[in-house]
Image 1 (cartoon, rainbow, N blue to C red):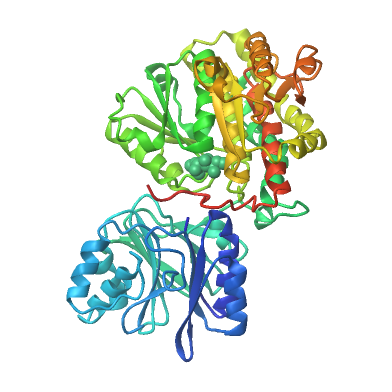
Image 2 (image 1 turned 90 degrees about the horizontal axis):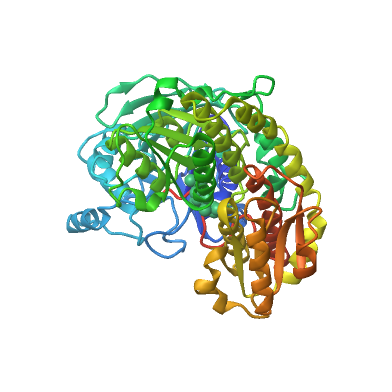
Amino acid sequence: MCGIVGYIGPRNATPIVLNGLKRLEYRGYDSAGLAVLTPQGVQVRREVGKLHRLQALVESEPLAGNLGIGHTRWATHGEPSRRNAHPHLSETGKVVVVHNGIVENFLALREELAAEGAQFRSDTDSEVIAHLIERFLSREADLVEASRQALQLLEGSNAVVVISTLEPDKIVAARLGNAGGVVIGFGEGEMLVASDLPAILEHTRRVAFLEPRQMAVVQAHGAEVMTLERRPVPVQPTVVPWDPVAAEKGAYRHFMQKEIHEQVRGLTDTIAGRVDFEGGKVFLDSLNLTPALARRVRKIFITACGTAYHAGLVGKVLLERIARVPVEVMVASEFRYADPLVSPDDVVLAISQSGETADTLAAMEEGRRKGATLWAIVNAIGSQAMRMADGYISMQVGPEIGVASTKAYTAPLVDLYMLAVLLGDLRGTLPEAERRRLVKDLRLTPDLVGQALAREEEVMAVARAMKEVRSCLYIGRGIDMATAYEGALKLKEISYIHAEGYPAGEMKHGPIALLDEETPVVAIAPQGPWYDKMVSQVEQAKARHARVIAVATEGDELIPPIADAVLWVPPAPWLLSPVVTVVPLQMLAYHIAAMRGLDVDQPRNLAKSVTVE
Ligand code: M6R
């Protein structure tokens, strides 16, 4: 989705803004632009397509100044084009705006402004903001007051950043709803604003996040924050721990490949400091889970989107088996419309890498409205989900840049496992010996993932054989069902090959009709409670002449003679096995997409954090 960067200070804003936009490329976009206040007035460059095209335009038509804002656009209103790319200018060119989100009442506002004589130059909803601010400026408000009055008229969840030729010493930034974050970076004699941390981390790690309905007036020496009602808000910058180098590709060809390999380290950090192996205990302090709350919990509603939803499906098995708490998993985009039967004795647990996914935040709001305790498992530090929740578990895997989520899938699986152990312990539903065994097993996880990763070359051979297929089925049972869904999602989103995840037992109720020599089946069949059933599923697929690629446990002797290829994984305790079985599927999707020459990290039509409904 759209990205925003702004700079004010003694340096030339142009390279800083362009570089910041580069760091936001992973979010997905189709056009980009920047505006810089130069001695000749405000100058704007906008271009369709990837940032290197905007860069080339800036090289041929340079612009320099100490104040600049930039934007990467993911089209919602109007096709990707130069005229629809941001920044947008008011009629006189005195007000310049970049915007993330959707102005839900833009048609009404546009009609009203057009009736007053405003001429629109784009098809976007965003342009109305520039015109509105200019309307209030012409009524003798200053930039801050004009912006404040204009922003109050907007409906929807938006982030807006404004500069003006009339007041060249400031940037006005506002966050209007839950989606569309705004972070302010405090440098030495310079300040930055952005939609996301990676855009500014190379300049400063001292940051403050705006809450919904807050605006900031950012000047080179600092920032003032106030509510949209103009009540002052104390600004307390925090220091974020992320290392800018963590957001570099290093020796890897793509971020996705790097992030797949970072899982060993990520899982080590996920467990570190949260487990006492001697005593067989788990500690999740930031969750604020008291024994009283643990005993009171009637039901847990897990809500999330995409990959995070699949993690939730595994979480249901873990929490029900280990802690014996009933769990319902709901896609977040449906949650608030389903009028779910949530009561104050329930927990709504959101899982989100970005912590900014609009649907997930809306589901959390619904949980809050119904009086539930809110928990979140999030990766992005300081994100809205983290701040909304009564307690949270942070994923500890560092920034995830590739659009296809990988390390932010395996980390929450381990978080959910630890949560299940802690809950079972506090509720008295988990016998001590069992608890000690489960905690001991955790120690194995990073190494098991490392062993699965070491088989990358074998996975590449399978990828070579599969890279031209048109359609593919992924099947699994029980705890491996979610792995089938996740493997299929990985393949489809980055390789554009149709792939479907299916509960293996459902094959004979319909999907088996699809099977022939052209449609391979990826069968998740590790040793565990469903192994025998999966062996017969593989037989059934083979009987329909389908090519079978099986994920199987090293040492298995039944699978190799009946499968066409095997993706081996090391033996793992079955409740932790989803952390391991997904690894070859991540690598398979990655290599197929890379072999097809596709843009692995920024697949078409997708965005890293989906901040609109
Ligand atoms: O930031 P979130 O975890 O809330 O994002 C949820 C989904 O948008 C995300 O997992 C998406 O499905 C990924 N592209 C999957 O690889």
